[in-house]
Structures are given as structure tokens and as C-alpha cells.
Amino acid sequence: MSSFCKIFTALTILFLLITTSGTAQQFDQVMSSEALRPFWNVYGFGASSFTLLNNSQLASDISSTQSNPAFLTNIKRPKASISGLNISAKNMSTLEDVGKEYSASSDVFGIDYIGFAYPVPVYQGSFVLAATFSPAVYFYSSVYSKGYTGATYYDENDDPHVLNTDLEYDSQESGTINVFRLAGATEFMKNFNVGMSLNLYSGERSYESSETGTPDTDGNMAFNALVYTEDIKPSYSGFNVDFGLCYQSDKYKAGLRISTPLSLSVHEVSEVAADYFYDDVDTIYVDSYDFEYKSRYPLEIAPNFAIKIANISLGLDLIFHKWQKIEVDLLEEQSDVNRDLYWNLKNTTDIGASLAIPFGKSISTRLAYRLVESPYADVADDEAYYQVIGAGIETILNKSVIVGCSYQRGFGNLSNFYPYFETTTYQKYTENRLALSVAVLF
Image 1: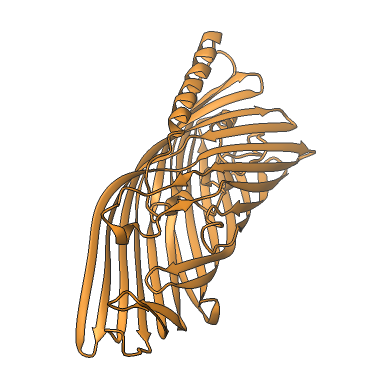
Image 2: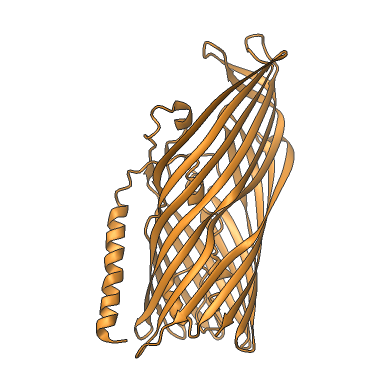
């Protein structure tokens, strides 16, 4: 590649980075609390990285558990890849952190990654183009809890009444947000690589919940039982840019990924209903809303470092999330919808460590651990940290077909607040992810 082409490529990438990052500083867009859900993913091992589709040891690349477009330069032959995934999640829930513990589970099957990379012939160095498709976020959950607790009700004079109540809660969630990436990387100078990825997001989510309360009435309440239901169906579309730098030699590697804030358009169609039962009378109050607004995912800065000792690679990954203050002022005429939508999320840092061990020239293994910090820890009764462990193995057949398998397990504690009954469920969750991948080199 000529010097002019290298300089032009670097300046183009730098210009796009500066302009998109500059725009990202104006974080005055609104978002609802439900729209926040896709922006924070506990499970931090990317499909193309941890299922070993980047073929770290087989391509003489030092290990990393995060994606970085600059790593594409390690691909020396055209390659097509596909990965399938099974997610099995389980929630153990208690009401008000006391009483009986109830179990609920969910399973998801699907394609987790499709990609194609093509090394473009150049005069010297390397230049690689790639296109990939993968889910950025999975929505899947099933939570069930019930018990006898003190719940707060309000009478016609808006006076509170705390009554012992048989309370039951059930929720189901499904959907994905997918991302299509167009990426390129070049060896700007010996051992120094730069890359950029343009990312297009789209997807939807379905969230349904029901809360049933049967209070020991004191004569002041105008109902014997109450069923409160939510049916929320947001859809998402958006765009952002990843910029990557990487220096690597046979023994050392240092990389940096900067992801500009993801600007998302959210279309939220929802229905909230309260069904009152009093003797033989059944009265339903329904509040439906349909609105569109903008929101942003935080700026991410993700450095990684690795060293190879003999044939073993040790890696350290960091991901800094620059969360911003989120204020919802779009819904001034929707007081019920706008309730509890003001957050001041704290900035967070994910910490990951990896160990890659090859066996001969055709088998590679990887172990990894990630500690994920919750941005909600200061504003909700959530655990401050969540943990993920994982292992993967791959082998190459006939120097052209690469078969891989990986396993991840996430675990931690969550809480779920009932907005109507002012009651909370506490959940202990575990999630298992099993992925199978195949890559073909041409």
C-alpha cells in the first residue's frame, strides 16, 4: 500500500472519530427507563472473539476477549464464519427477600454470528475488509414470585394504606437487537494496525408482566383484588462507529477500541391496565401510549494488553463506560408513564482476564473471566457487580476448516420493583451460553 493511501486512510478514520465523538458530547436526548434495558449487557464476551472465530492462536494473534476492528489484519485468507448459540437462563426469586424461593427459566436458540472477511491484495502490509451480522443484545427472561407481604394502597382521598396482601408476580421477556457491521483494517506501519467499523442496529423487544394482589381490606378500599398488567413493545434502530488501534509483535500486544455513543431511535408501543375486582363487579382502567424518542448508549473506551510467555498468552481487558445523566422531559403530559424515569447512572468499568493455551499447531483453548459493574447500583437496589466465566476450544481440519465450541456462565443478583404495590422481588440468576462455530478458509 502506498504512503499516500496509508495517510489518507488514517486521516479519514481520525476525521470520522473526531466528528462523531464531538457530536456525542451533546447528551441532551431523552430515554425511558424501559429503553435503558438494551444499553447494558452483563455478558461481555463478544461472539466473534470468545467463540474463537478470530482464530487467535491459529492466526498467531495474541488473545483478547473483546472485539477490535484493528484485529482484522490477522486474517490472511478469505474466511466465512457462522456460529449458533443456546442460552439457558434461570431466576430464583423471593418476595421482599423473605419467604419461599420460586424458580423460573427460559431458553433461547439461534444464530449468534455470521461473518465474511476478505484480505485485499496490496503492495505491502495488509488490508482486510469484513461484513458481519450478530445479535448485540438478547432479551430473554422469565421471573415468577409470590408471597404474603405488606403492600401500600391509596384510597380515593390519596391516603396510603399498608395492608397484608397475597401478592403474585409473573413476567416474560423476549426479543433481540441485531447489529450489522462493515469493517476495514490496515497495517499502517510494521506491527501497527488501524481499523474502523460502521455499525447498524435494529431490533425489538416484548415485555409482559402481571401483578395480582388480594389484600386483607380494612373497609376503606374499593376492591377485593387487583390485577395490574403491562404489555410493552419497544423497537430500536441506530448507528455508531468503532475505531481500533493495535500494536502487536510475537510477544506483546496492546490494543485500543473507542466506540462512539450509539444513537438509537426508539418507538415504544405500550399498554398498562389495572383490573379491579369488588364483589361481582369487574372494572378495568387501561392506559395506552405510542411515542417515539431518541436515546444514546455511552461512549466506550476499551484498552487491552497481552503478553505471550512460551506458548501461553495472558491478556487483560478493560472497558470504560462513560454513562451520562439521563433526564426524561418528553413525557410531561404522561405523568403515569413518566414516573420513576429519572436516572443518574454512574460511570462503570468492566475488567476481564484471559488465558490462551494452544496444543500443537491445530488446537487452541481459552479461559476467561469478566467482572461487570452495574451502572444502576447507586439508583436501584441492585448488586454492584456481576461475574462471567468462560472456556473455549477450537481445532483446524485440513488447514481450511475451523471448528470451535465455547461455554459461558454468568451469575449475580438483581431486584425488581413493583411500581404499583411499592414492593420488591429479589432474584438470584444464572445464565449458561453454549456456542458452536464453523469457519472456512478459502
